[in-house]
Length: 142
Image 1 (tube, helix red, strand yellow):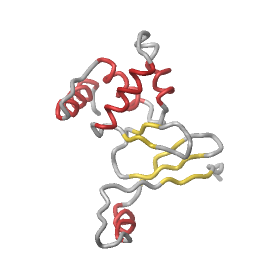
Image 2: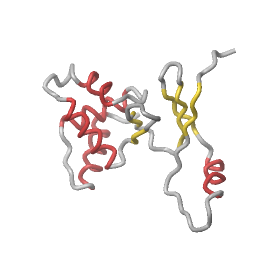
Image 3: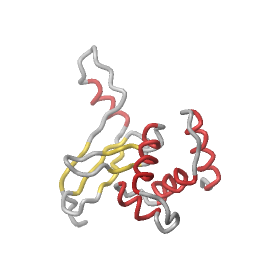
């Protein structure tokens, strides 16, 4: 199990590698994303952080999230015309967006499938990442 100290150290190191410093706001926001991995919007993150940091502004939350994305600590996930959502899962995976509930779920992808998807690119194209989004609704378990 990874401790909060280990997470803070990892965050501080990644930010430092990007020429930035760790701040209490960045730490709290990063922790919120790691604690409940439900692909929150910036507004969701703001609501979760506000009780712990009453003086934080929505602008600070947006700036911190952008910094975390730029430092490759979280991924920005966009669905057509919807607000950006934030995902701390950095392993290759797809997303399933439930259009009925609005929930977003991580879907693990086998490496072999990713290789097949990349193999259909023309020879002069080299993909650094692949984004696959499924849309629909979850059926009740049978």
